[in-house]
Length: 108
Image (cartoon, rainbow, N blue to C red; front, side):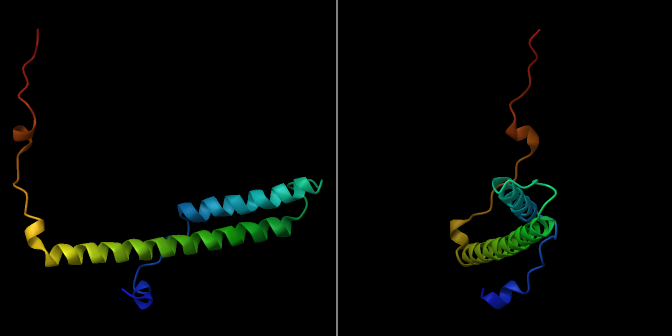
């Protein structure tokens, strides 16, 4: 699976965990920079807050995209191995739920 195969994967959602987390970290970094420089944290440097939030969102999105590629590559290799070595993965016998649990005997 090459880098061109990554283009065949569906894109991740715009709102995902990495994007939200890193956008929050970027915004907090801008607020911390304002506080360290003795400026009002929320009122000054709004352009910096927007920039750092957007940068964090962008990095988080692409981290998710890369993680999806790595996991898809791993799954592809794993399923190919299973397909080539069926003797290592025999099918399991199917059991009913009643065969799995012990019989119930109420104590009164």
